Image 1 (cartoon, rainbow, N blue to C red):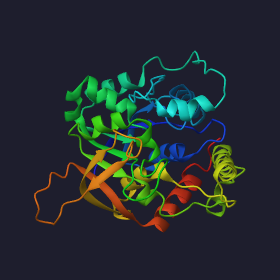
Image 2 (cartoon, rainbow, N blue to C red):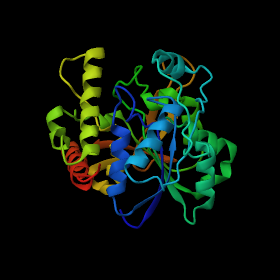
Image 3 (cartoon, rainbow, N blue to C red):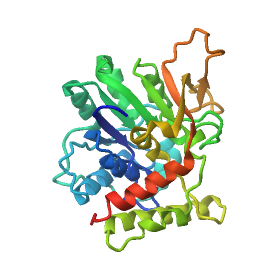
Image 4 (cartoon, rainbow, N blue to C red):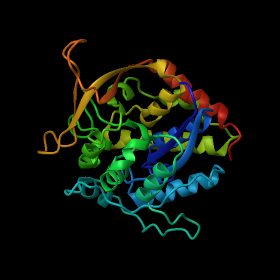
Length: 324
């Protein structure tokens, strides 16, 4: 990928919470290893965990990684979804103490930091969305004109054919389909990495054995958290085999090497009307190469899954080998 890219990462970071998936933190760690990516801000959003928990996890991770200087936010915002399905079906079921905002935590809210960062950027920036689209949807709804200074939104979310949380509703879209509609209708180019590619290859414990490194407490903690998440999912849903996926790493792998993917122009629409289609992504392709087609969106339809897995495992093991 040619040229320096300034990126803002929007994430529902769960690393640091109990039974947490680690794909968000992997994406952030991978982004730090791509020399032509400049992370200008990171904003937490509610998804795998509530917005407050994601904020706390992000603040603590950046401090541990020595990256507190990256502008980041603290958020407690709820999804635009008036049914608040994620709140009643996920967050309210997970008992936990109220997250007290640390004294040294940032004062700015996620939406305000997105607006500030986009407006002040000297060049159109790229937003990497690896959680629900609540923050980005609200920012675009509040100030639609910022779309002219967003080069692209590269997102993990959606599905063409692979079952997600509820039918074809992938989790990130299901959390806040109304925000997804706003983003996809904003006019900003959107590239989507959905379950059709992110679930093409399972990640097994032996794949991440190199991360069990006593010389890097951070990498070892990522390893142990991932195994714990695999165990939690196996106990909850089966099968007995521990498996995971590198979902949120895919957009960063795209920046590292676009040739890993086959990406096609499409139109994506979001289901919001009933429980059957709620949060689903309906992806339409041109009927023929010569057919008139707006092509506002792009979707990854295939991936070199072996090369991508090797890239994620090797980069985390090597780039972060001395991280405490």
